[in-house]
Length: 396
Image (cartoon, rainbow, N blue to C red; front, side, top):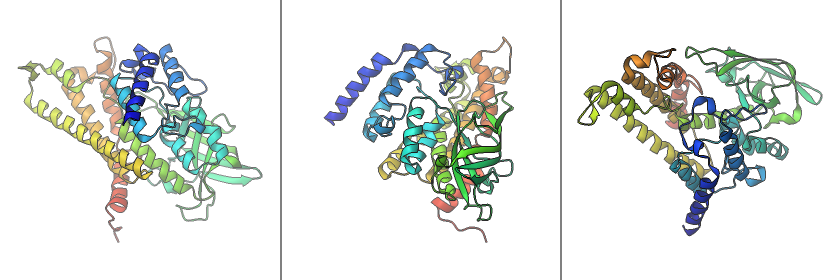
């Protein structure tokens, strides 16, 4: 306990010295730091904050120091996160590499792959994307048809991916391919890592109803990838893919799909509807917001408990699917409540008559419609829960 308290004191002093004042304020979407070869910092303090955190390995606190991580214990990382929350610090780095791919490289990668890829993830020098879904293989991911054919010291990859988040900005892709077309569909799959600048890679953004274009179609035409960039055993890529999906669903759930336009639901409702004796005047809306906040609190406590259990057991379980279902419902209801509370202000699309936060609330509400699809549909996750968590039999 004394050692942890000493660590807390040291951490608090370091954060006070190195976390700029502007990094202790709510983060506008345009100031989110994704890093990469062409990293852009809308706020110069964001660059300083990333460099400071990466120098400590605290963008990946529990990764081994040998690969650029912080080397912290679970207890030390818990203290670090508490101290970051205490000063309302922004995330220094948004990274699919750290959230999903790094942990799997630690588990399945060769020593050379760990040394090659992990430190760059920690420092935000690479922006990663995920080549999973295909036009004919979304919910049925194992039905993928992108081929990887052996050719000397390389594999030649040809196929198409879709809903590839930020592929047009990414530096590297982790890609699922079929290396044995004659094997059963959950077999004969292999995972490759390749540079998005490789000849034959083309991306096309997909525009959503929210007006944003975070997803892309990705076309792969005879993309040559060195053999040493295969992750995990040949034809056993489905095992790697499932692990990534578990990490993905856990991190989606922990992130809650966003913060509801940065507007506090209660404050926004009070401003739009008015108050009586200091509380929200609309009793029905007040009741539903209260129920929503209780659900959110229970969800966060459950997620924290599951995270601690996973760390103790060293694994991410199929309970990730439970949290993915709950997180999608949570965010969809939260964004709908916010739009309702804002009244006419919650239906704006553009123009000077609407505040920036309210315009984003409208887009977040529309964007949330995809929450029950992305990262595995709610239907797919219900099936996983039924089979892997509850142990129910397949329908005959």
